[in-house]
Amino acid sequence: RSEMADDDRVDPRITALAAREQAAMREAMPAAVLKGMGGGRGGGGDPPASWEEMVERSAEGARKTQEALEAAGVAETWEELQEGKWQPLIDSLSEGLEVTEHSCAGPDGNTVPLCMIRPEGATGRIPCAYYIHAGGMMMMSMRQGIFQAWGRLIARQGIAAVLVDFRNSLSGHDSVPEVAQYPAGLNDCFAGLEWLNANREELRITDQICVTGDSGGGNLCIAVALKAMRAGRLDLLPS
Image (cartoon, rainbow, N blue to C red):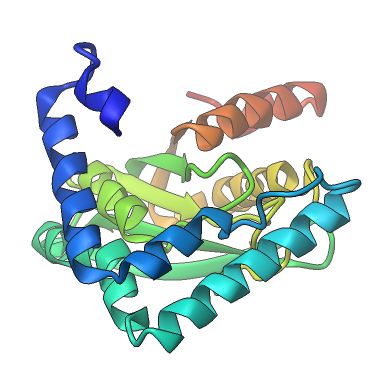
């Protein structure tokens, strides 16, 4: 973040926000815990010899970080720093919106969770944005505050937002604990899009469906479109 402060391409508001978050973390967390978090994903030593070893190292690093947080008595503080900061924004954006949870069958006997956010009282069918979250296709979840807030911002534009959770390639989470190599995550996103189209009437959405995402999720958007084209299913992307 020190490089960010010297980079005039970065919006000063983003630089200031990053600095405030870093200062809050230093104030709230013991220095020894923060220092130990560098290995939170199992870094250091020889590179992993396989994907399985990389996943194992990641899980071990996460476990050690959690143990350090609990031993220092700051596990709840860490969770608040990571996710609690989003709750006031989520609460303020939720007024006038309807949030429903759904799921569909995945391609490998797994379950694909989905979250739909739409304006309350919207009459008739409305367009929909199918949102794929960031995380390099290897971590994070649609349940995290930043993505829940973004889904609400989309829905406040008068359309429906459907967020999808898929199998990450490195670390699982409460919503989808399974970890699987690519293209498992892509196939989950594609299954969710098929489900969305098959249930348009029940979900009260039109065939104007936009597949959108950011970072790794943006990459998956492109991959979903290519998969639809190769499968002869461009009808899933009529808009």
